[in-house]
Image (cartoon, helix red, strand yellow):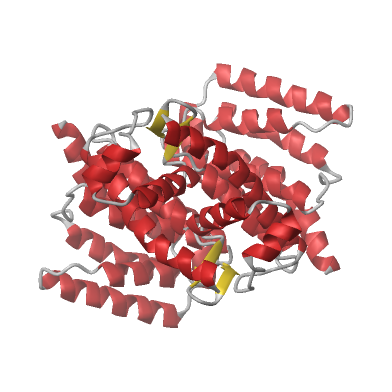
Length: 240
Length: 240
């Protein structure tokens, strides 16, 4: 029992150092891409031990708050939702008794986020968006006809769809939940729904509804887009 | 430049060990609260060095995937959104040039999430929810009349409001963005809006709209709830 006790002790100090380094970054107006002082300088400035600083830097790397660039130093990172996404994928698939239900809520969350953007998307939608999105759907269909996955095109579709919306947090959440679904699905040995055609077609309906400014048709198309996943997951839940 | 290079080298190994421990947890059907084997056993099972395992455990603690209980061992943790929330608060307040705008998007995200739940909330709302929520608003008002904050009551209000909704991820996101706003505000020296009365009153309107099953009134009340924050933030953006 020695090792865990040690880890717990050092963790408190690490957390203090994490807090102090974050404060240092703010107080010195460092931004994404800016370099942090060396460990030695941080030790002096913050009055922490070298090992606490080192562990704190590791924790901040884990959280994507700083990044260590091989041979160059430690920099303020982009602070992406990457750690969240990895954690959520793991949490989604962890427990066999609940993983399928968890996937249901991931899909449901994507649907809620998409539906919430209808009015704004109608306002900002342009003809060039329409063409770019329809081109992506065409590629999805080609891949699907050849029995190939179309993950990249699907992600590009949903990113392009939201590219003109004003709230960057909603765009990030949308992409995060897309990734949680996409990464969790194979871990649960979930195939694509048999009626994935309906989802592909629904992408076109989403585009045309926005192009016409038809909020009700957009809503219906979003529901159709997720319906095959809902049905597949409901089927798996019934089996258990 | 020695230290960063070392950190970068060990990080790769750590990430492998992180992946392997996560796989171990899944393959052995461990769940929240279950104990992990000792470091020695993990080293043997996963073929990693002791230092890689130790660093991986630290990374997993940082991500709230495992927790080290002093003197007892390492356990699968609750995998909360805690690391996300801390990271998001930091990211929100980091850059003076964008922090006020970031707050605008945090408030906007809360509003989008609240609005998206109207139809479901109307369906599941009960008389006892109404009473519990009105009691909380009464306490908010009492605190506010005495010039005191009412953070706990406000959080309890929004948690209670969503307590009957079916999607736990949306409940978590709602609470996460509540916390991001609440924790970032003092870091940016943002006071409460001068017209916070309107927000308090809007809580009552939200309750009564749901009680009557009036979706339009719910929508209007949610907009009123956030309006004082929107105005305050817009005023700060105009100043810059």
